[in-house]
Each structure stands twice: as C-alpha cells, then as structure tokens.
Image 1 (spheres, rainbow, N blue to C red):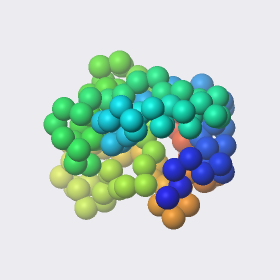
Image 2: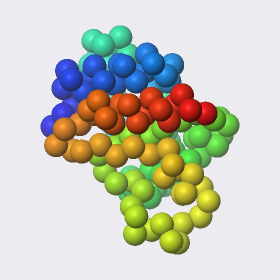
Image 3: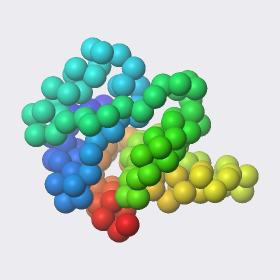
Image 4: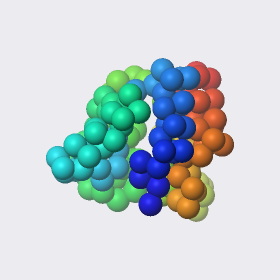
Length: 133
C-alpha cells in the first residue's frame, strides 16, 4: 500500500501548496473515527489537514461516491476542484450513457496507478486542474 508513503505525501503537499486547495476526504477513511484520526495524524506530519468529509449517504459503491462528490461540489458551488483515486471512478464503459454531471466529474478526475500511488505526473495533473479554472 502507498498509504502515507513519503514520496506520495510530498506530492500531495506540493499539490496543496501550488493550488491552495483544501483536502476533502471521500474514501472509506471517512467512515470510522479511528481511521480519521490516523489520517489526520499522518497528514499533520506534512503540515496538511482535512478540511471536510463527504457524506456516506447512499453507500460506498464507486457510483455512490461519485454522486456524493458531485453533491458536495454543487452544494458549495465550487469552481476549481479535482478528484484523485486509484479506483476507476469514471469508467470509460459508462461514457455513452452518462449525464452531464458525470461528464463533468470525468473532466475533474485523476486516476493514480495503485502500484505507485500519487506520483509527480498525477500531482501535475491535479495542479493543472485546480489552477486552470
């Protein structure tokens, strides 16, 4: 696992510093207090902190998570936002049948390689998305 790998954490820190973005957690880390505390502690080592968590209403499937993220972004009327995950939250197979909001999500999604975690290339993509708006 690449959880809290120093190289990945340095890249995350670079994304935050170069974009001014806030961290909002949408993964299963948000479900349990123990996991949230571990996350907060490890982020703290890099001067980072979680600003918010998305709701868990609707379940934990990838499709539910996408809906939760879109609801969050819409409710706060965010212009610049990006989603990073090693799971494919925007599969190509669904592209022909998806609505406008799912198309919007796809444009803000950066998928990492699960064997590498957040690398320079993925971080650069996130920074570009976050600073482009």
